Length: 491
Image 1 (cartoon, rainbow, N blue to C red):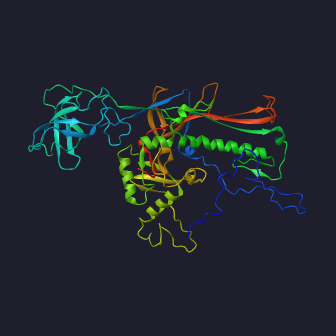
Image 2: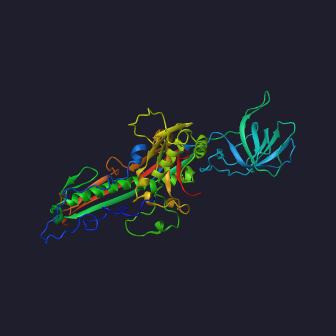
Image 3: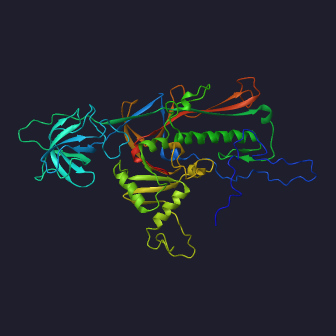
């Protein structure tokens, strides 16, 4: 049996700027001789409607005094090239290897193929010993580097094996360095390598909202007792509207950090000329992980082999011991089923774990975490379930802009990482995810709110209204994005 479309859910229960019959109050006809029997208190049919909580759980907030935030992340320590070719035929004792990999560091590399030689050229030196393997698995050799053409991206190698080169000159090869060897009494290593730091940056955006109410409406008492998620209650409708505006803005403070994208060159946002409208964007969490992190394109893992692939990728990254999985409901259930299937009795419904077989026992069909190489803790992500947010998107959005792809969850490493802070001028420990907000000794723009007008205690103008203003200026920093995993649909 499928879930019917009715009664469904109202996607706009309270987002009107004023109280209307279409959102809360039914227009009763009081000329009727029979008064309606009304409930005095408003019923909270949607429970807690806020979606913000993710960044409070996994991140931190700290001030910044600049329009741009820059940080450096460590590059790979070891050298590996994956698009090489040999100029010699099979059985040759020596060969000239041409490196076809990009000679500049590649931030998107996940296999260690980025080049740490900051002067350009290849990062291989005379006297180093290398392993050379065919990418198709047809052969492998070990050899010693005898000369290097840094500008040309080639090096000469002499093989240790008596049979010479085991692959042909048309094969694509992988090369990595495993050591070096020098004769007695010889000079030391001639060339040296510089550390390969990758520099990342982001810039904050200014977010605003406001709520207006006239002085007359502030003096109008209602007949329904209203309440909001922050505990405010009363019979003044404008108080509810003001509190909901505040809650909505606080949600946007988080969802903007999740969804934001930078405005691309020649985009419509860049061309905007409307007064006061921002047009540069910022790099949100989904954007950063989608471009610099790892992506599972099948929606979510449904069998253990899918998770083994994920773990294999994590082994090639920072290998963070503890990770948290934030998932939508479908992905959470799929993972529960995957874990339950590991129990030999799970398919028959006998048990999922160690129970006392009590007849009063409430069977727990879910899992909060598991260990397989690393520790994984599972948590539902309300933002991905909410039908007014990403919970209402179709799974069919598998192509196009990264902002339009259906996201089913994200793996976030727990703990902190050490980075070089450009402002402090030294190494600092930072959470993998954290928000930077603009602040100085005289101005704090983390979360500003102020009132203008001539009502409700404000006395800043002759306008008979109270206007509550909200403002924040912030950006999110995703450090070590290669340790994150985004679960979404699409290649």
